[in-house]
Image (cartoon, rainbow, N blue to C red; front, side):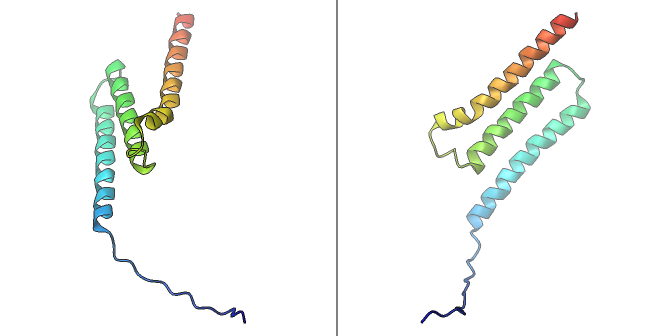
Length: 106
């Protein structure tokens, strides 16, 4: 006969120290890159160099996050590129639109 009051047993799994160390390492790398962006924002003068640094560091962090947290690092490289290519094309589109608007306003 069907027992409606089954007990659910849980087991405690010991922590996987290797995975925890990997998560802290990833967090540290992303934090250092973010801190570098933050410092550049206050130390450097506004201009093309500063914006280029922002864009490059942001793209690097995006590639790193996609590769790590979406587990694409173990996959084929084309899958990472297929994920990032639309973002890069949008960035290029914004750049071209900005340059075109600047030329029209001049």
